[in-house]
Length: 324
View (tube, rainbow, N blue to C red):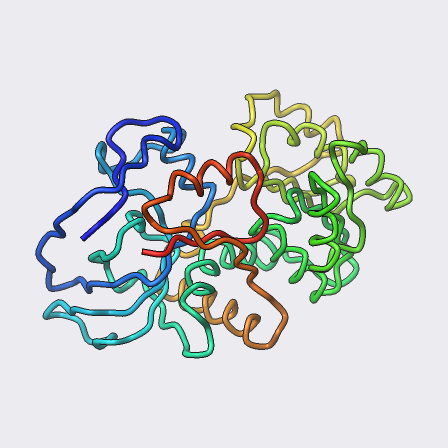
């Protein structure tokens, strides 16, 4: 079978499309044939070495996929052959097939396509924990969503609006502003032509935000602190522009006794119970129409490097999936 392999850290060119032989299936594993594979900025971090792959080099990147079970280990009882499944926290997704621990899988209903299944897990579960666990957003709260037209950003806008929050989004182009507005952002700020700190103060009549969701990182982090009300929460959950530079935590006290957290999805799906419950909540939101998972780009697995180039150039909106 074919898979993407990384033999040296670096740019998109290190993503090599190669023949790979899967190891024998272990009793506690199942084999999944992928129909779609999710692409996330997390994959870029591993490709560049910002996050080290525990397996060392070479490795197959990717954490998200959807497909069908084509083989079962002898000790498997929860799943059967032909089951439609999806996952979002299992490293090694950029492949036509893979062996996987079934504790990382959830069953995918017939009403949800493989494309959406591959696009919904990491981004959707991230949006779930950000809005419902890291900060329990309630009706009337004001939230600031950076990269509001991105994969997670669009879901935060939709879900935040459904909760009843006042959603402010930042984007990088007029086209993305239209998308964020359509997704549910009540106010959209184009950060390359507007001062988002000043605009947040204007929009909120100086009250500022209860929480900031920042997946951009270095270029937005420090100024985002100025968008928070006293004792507001800064949620730094990504590094699309680079990692946040070290800073004196005393800055938080000077800006109003602010809170800061750097969460990851893995900490919110560390048990089977958490994974299943949060996935059920996500699929319910999709089935009820609260969430629309926008898959705007479908790229052949062999062209994964092109998908990464587009992602890093911020030329994408919504989700990108690789098709094996």
